[in-house]
Image (tube, rainbow, N blue to C red; front, side, top):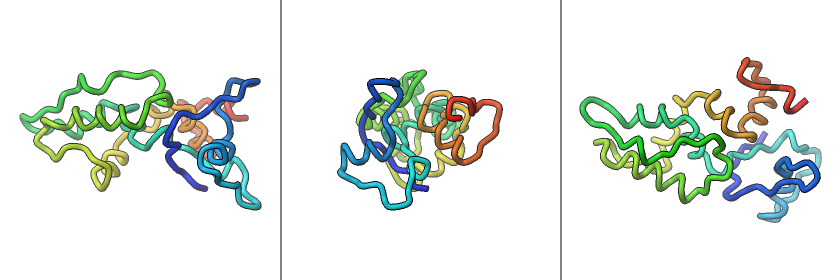
Length: 152
């Protein structure tokens, strides 16, 4: 199984209005061919970047950057019902601005991003991302917050 950033908005199928398949997305954008024997179940996308998942659970991101008397600015990350259309540029700007005054090093991709990813709640991400729900479904997640009928 491969999990990668989509880097941009994913087109929708004109007939079903669902996002196009991950392999079709990679073929259209990056000219990647689906390897022999691979299926759509083998490729999953983090839309549009991993940091979108941090925006989905903004409370955990804010908690990470709020320690002692230092607090980040929670107003810099807007509450979103759907994280999939968020541009990579906007997401990084929000995270950097939110963390800037916290007393910790300002957010940037790297070790810190994976520390925060480890504490976000998957149900928050699933509620705001079709592609996260799809990944969790294919991983066999059976939690009550995942509507498996969406993919069966």
